[in-house]
Every structure is written in C-alpha cells, then in structure tokens.
Length: 197
Image 1 (spheres, one colour):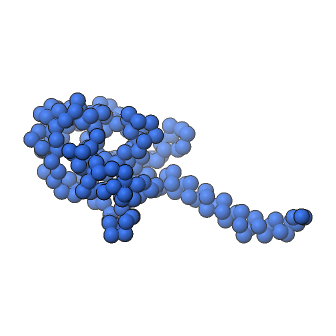
Image 2 (cartoon, rainbow, N blue to C red):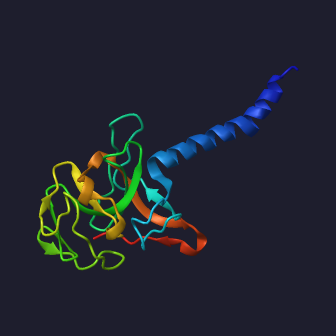
Image 3 (tube, one colour):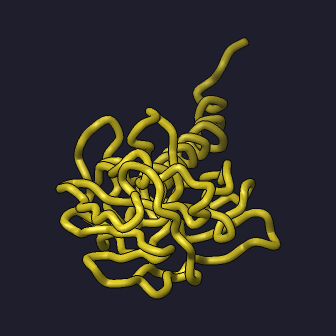
C-alpha cells in the first residue's frame, strides 16, 4: 500500500505529533512537577490509609534530572511535619511515605510518648498530636539522636506499626522525592495536606 506525503502529513499532524507532545508533557510533569503514589500500608494511619492515592510535589524541594546527580533549585527546604516520599535507605527502588521530623545537625529524642527536637517538646504537628513509641537503635526511649550531615530523620504517624528512622536510621537527602500535598482517591478521602512548621 502506497503511503503518500499527504497521508503521512495527515497522520503526523493529527495522530503522531499530538501523541508525542502528550507523552513528553506527561514525562516532564511526572519527573519534575508531580507524581502519583499509592499507600500500601498503615504506617501513616490515620493521616493516610492503605489504598489512598496521593500526589507528590516534586519541585518544592528541587527535582532531580533523571540519570544524573543534577538537582534543580528548590522552592523551600523540608519542614517539621511535612509528609514526604523518599527512596528507602535499606531497600533499593522502594518508595516510603513518612513524616519529616528533623534535618542535619538537629537532635531527636522520644520520651514518654513525646517528641523533642533540639530539646524542645513538639506539642502538635499539622494533623494533631501523636504518641511516639521509643523503639529501635535510633529511637530508643530517652536517647538523644543527632542527625548527620546530608541526612534527615522520618517517622510514621502510626508509631506502633511503622518501620521508620527509629529502626533503620537516617535517610540521605538525595533520596528525597517530594512532599505529599493531596489525597486524590478515593473520592470521599479527597483532601489537601497542611504545610509543615
């Protein structure tokens, strides 16, 4: 079958070109702007429930150019209380969702269910008061832990059922993917998250 220039031009302009543009836009948005994730466990309950689908803002902390170590300028640094998505420091290619607690140079202590950052008791976080259990090598009760350079400390809201920094330690800053800003599914759970402190 002969494929004339006129037919090729029609297919290019009406089908191929729009599909290529849409694919490039989708790639750009997913890589640098926002990416969807599904919550697999109850470690962030009641803030996030298993099956919740969220959107993550990837440019707020400075997106990373794929296959390179080049990082784009950030809008702001992570704050106490931000719900963040990051690559697990112990399992390759596994994404985790936790609450950002402290950055490099800050100290973390769990005592009597309360959380202390640099010796200051944290009264509430953006979605209420949580009871934190002192467990693990990096979260032992009444033990002050200092976050090393280039890392951060993250905890799950469901402290009794969360494998987090208390057990596996600190997360390299380079593993940070972005900040969760919206539950978009299921419909009855649609909500935006408030900003951290």
